[in-house]
Image (cartoon, rainbow, N blue to C red; front, side):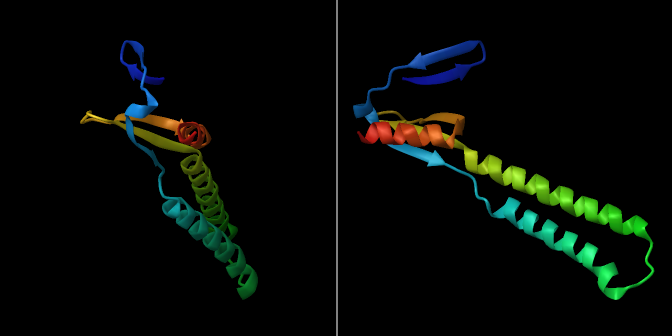
Length: 120
């Protein structure tokens, strides 16, 4: 049974497994958020290391904000990467149908259970 949400409610369709032509699990790439996380970590380290290594009497004002901004970028990027791993799109193509059934915001673990159930 596949549910499809409409504007005025929800309707369900019974889809026999023999009619399913293709089942796709579409996930997003982890490269962009992980790259931002790495850049944030490198920036945090450099901002922290530069005044310590140079032993310069630098004012604290720009460095504490830079360190905080780099840490926030790193943490937000890791949260986005976690979201991209856990959420996917499930696309079901039926025999004789031009448009596939697309189910968005599906938990990746639930979609993998659907794959295992259909494999039998």
